[in-house]
Image 1 (cartoon, rainbow, N blue to C red):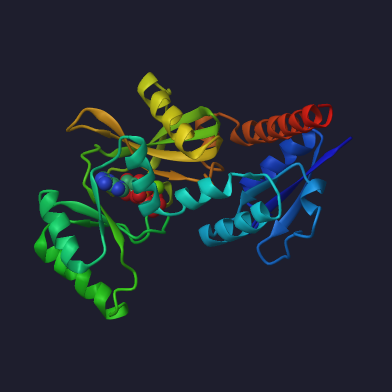
Image 2: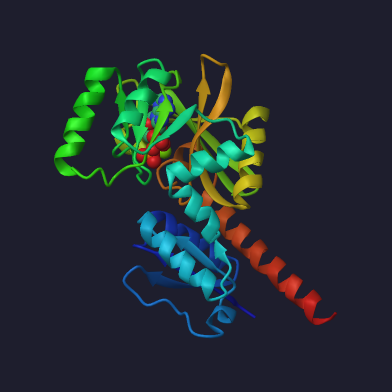
Length: 296
Ligand SMILES: Nc1ncnc2c1ncn2[C@@H]1O[C@H](COP(=O)(O)OP(=O)(O)O)[C@@H](O)[C@H]1O
Ligand SMILES: [Mg+2]
């Protein structure tokens, strides 16, 4: 019998179209659910779907929709818990700290005064990040007191009550002109590439960084393994730095809905197919577990 999954999206980008195509090839039907549509949440609705794949563009929608589906008894991919951690940089910092995942030194600043303290702690050079953001938006490199005063004054004019605090403050990592994106599907790092930018210290591809494929070495694989232990199996885009001061890899952040339309054409790994096969495996495992329960 054909399986069916629910695919939650904001719009069908090239990524989702490819995933649907590969799922169909594996005999899995896909019901597309746009952010503007009702979710099938009635009693027993979850039983009609193998799982719900969450690929909403807005992090807020990914979080709220996976939460509702989770409450209604769906298995969601990624889990609501993983999405909750990945969509908040402050949550990530705390969870990774607890689990001993290597990451830049950080502070969580609840007040402007704490920001000045953070800047001093990190040697007059730090990065300020809002808890929820992506594509490099709102990420600021602070290069001294005057720079911080400018950041605070600009912020104060639009947010006099400091409602956008707390923010994350990280040490600035001497990472060369690149960071590393690793695509994880299930438990496996399936592809890795450098995002290189000579002009911009923010190496997001959206801001123009170039893609250079690299092999997943042992250290990168070990960090990915640690991330999967902490977040659970799933589909992730992990951003790593090679810290040239400490000569080790650290985790910048983990994304829960990695884009791959542009990058896979360069590194050649068929991410959509990996995702489709992983969805199929997950559904089959669930069916197997249910069968074992019923025959007990
Ligand atoms: N602590 C840091 N040190 C050096 N560069 C950083 C640091 N944090 C972020 N960056 C740069 O800024 C980019 C965006 O930061 P990131 O935390 O990944 O936010 P976003 O969710 O917007 O991608 C990173 O890819 C990296 O190039
Ligand atoms: Mg990033």
